[in-house]
Length: 367
Ligand code: CU
Ligand code: CA
Ligand code: CU
Image 1 (cartoon, rainbow, N blue to C red):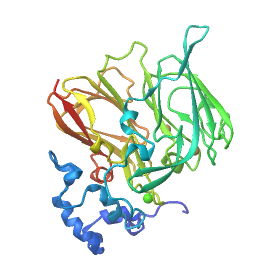
Image 2: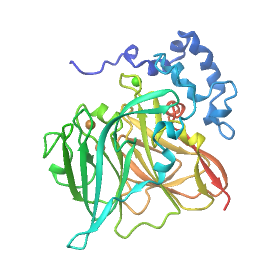
Image 3: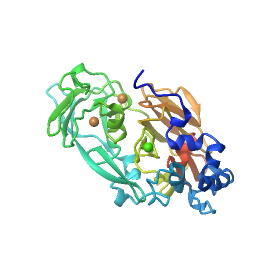
Image 4: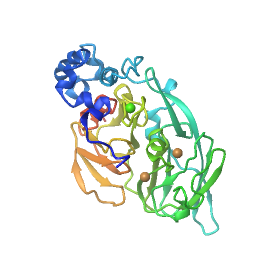
């Protein structure tokens, strides 16, 4: 049937083909060299001292996309993370940037929260020398993390300033016409048009929103997504250090695969700017996977374990682990304390994603 992918390994995107076997690597002399080097030098994943800056053979993981792809598309990429001023995205500030909206009180006493969200076409330098022609909500990838309390009334004033039709599809419980699905209610919002999504904040949990225009994959992959957190009415135990991490990817050279992976928008950022935490404090992480093209993403923490609350919809954790996997749209809450000071890696427990940007550090200072 037309449109069905063929299960032919030669038809796989070249990055996957390259990773699929030594024979493929050997067929490309330039890659055979670093492939053998790579086995010894697992770089940042090796453990203490294995930061990507310390890959002494001159092969920081960040250089791998160039070699791996063999597309010639990233000739300018020299590894490392791009300065946040150049990117226009700051993953460290996104950790803590909970947008509670403009609040007022309705006649029935409930809190009304309102946000203005604008879809814009914008190019981002997501890695040094790598430009990504993105579509964003409010000029950032991921979009703003919307925060509300269970039962609040929400109004999201959406304007499409991009060149393509878009929507905002929220995960949550609401009427069909507020779902941001093309063909239902206002449906697709045309360029230049606006629409106000209006619904109540329920159920509590860690959620997300994203564009639902078809073809869906590029509308998400281009950057139209963000976190959506609904706090239980009675609250959660107060965390000392509460943050959001949105896992994403970037398809920078076409096809249907990603060349870069990140948390909060910039590959390798948290290698250069570790997440700062204090020994023994309660750390709460809202972890959201919106990664397009790859079926599964994951989060692995070194030197520690965490309690995991899937979707954040229960007040008791379901798992005590150091690794969790999420498909696209899955999310959850991680809670933990670091008993010892020092630097601890966190990364996708999919080595390929880690090496293409999805890795970072927690830096624990003595209390
Ligand atoms: Cu869209
Ligand atoms: Ca690609
Ligand atoms: Cu979704």
